[in-house]
Length: 274
Image (tube, one colour):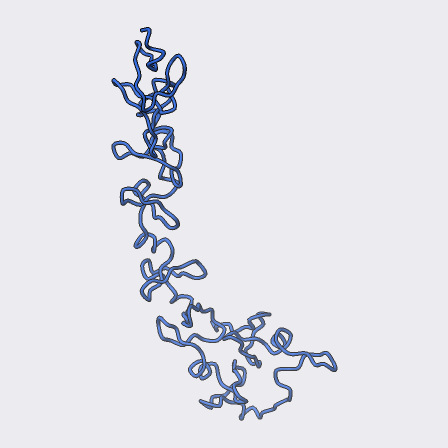
């Protein structure tokens, strides 16, 4: 079966017809003029790619390079000379960066940073599958599809074992996804939040205080002891600084002498009658 050679725009066959190459894609003259030609300021019609008619004897209609006949064959024009597709490709077409063969006009090619590939040659160096128009990641002069790059180079989350592709969290020198780095108790995300740990497990402050912190003898709320929180400790009891007050007159006893009466603390004045 003869390989098709069609206009890039209207898809009509170009065999035996003149065509014009633009960015390595062939166009019939009509499509090229409609798409790319300038318009005459006087008559408003397109100025053709070839402003004068040219005629050949059939025996004279041959390739400028190899002299083979161009009758009923595709050809290209370059600087007033006619060339068969083979000669044009060898002389002017780009070469595939992988197989080093000519990329024929009209065939699909992939381009990246000035290099060109046949579509079938532009493959992932790990899985050997064509990349096509999918996303890829270049590394050390090799191209990887995204799944292969992640398997080979990306850090893996210590929790879910999946690749970390964007923004992670490092805790105890181990990588985590933000969504995987959560409080051991309530499972809320800890990224960007204050947290602490116990036995190498991370907790949000609320859960840590509820589970492990001592309770204030005054207000019974947890005393976290985190972030420089000040508290008073006496005989296995603890108070927030703001809660360490005389039971009777509410005078702050921080830095003062005090007396105890069962579970209460008193200033010396209120306790003098004890």
